[in-house]
Amino acid sequence: MDGQRYLLGEVLLSGNLPRIFDMPFLAAHLEGMGPVEGQVLSLACEPGPMLDRGQTRSPRPPLPHHTRCLLCDQEPENIRHLLLTCPFTRQAWHEGLSWLRLPAPTPEHDASIQDWWMRARDATPPSLCKALRSATLLVPWMIWKHRNACVFDHITPSLVELSDKIKDEMRCWARAGDKGFRLVLPPS
Image (cartoon, rainbow, N blue to C red):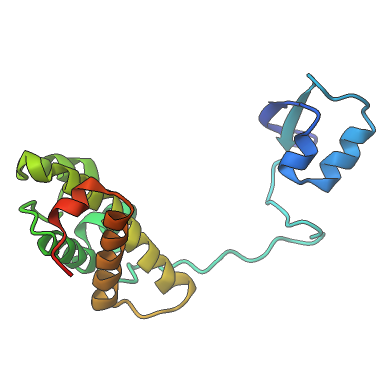
C-alpha cells in the first residue's frame, strides 16, 4: 500500500474557495499556484487512521461503545432496535401518539420504520395524516437526541423527560407553522 491514495472528490475552484472553506493551509497552497479560477482540486487521502490537526503520533483511542441499548439494557443496540423495538422508545412513541390523539399503532416488530409508517398511515384517518407525518419525523429525532445525551452526557434515561421534550417540541413545531400539529395538539 506504499504511496497508494484514495480519491475523495474533486472541486472546481473559484477565486473565493479559501474563504468559503476557511482553510488557511489550503489558501497558502493555492496562492503559490497563481490564478486558480477554473482549476480542479483533487482531494485525496492516504490509507490508515485519520490524524487530528497537529497530531503526529497515533490517533486517539476509539470512543467506548456500549454493546447493549442504553435505554432498555435488553438487546444489542442498532437503529431498528432503537427506533422501533426498544421497550423504552415504544413507550415514548405511545406517549407522543396518544397525546396527539392519533389512532396510529405504535411501532412493534416492524422490519423498518417505513413498514411501520405504512401500517400507521393505513390506520390513520386522512385528516390526521399530516400530524402523523410530523410525528414520524419528530419522535425518532427526539429519541436519538435523548440516546446521545445518555451516551455523551451520561444522563440517566428518563421516559418522563423524553416525553416532556417531545411534547414541547411538538408545541414549538405547531407555533412555527406545522399544519399537522396545529390540528391535533391538545389545548395548553
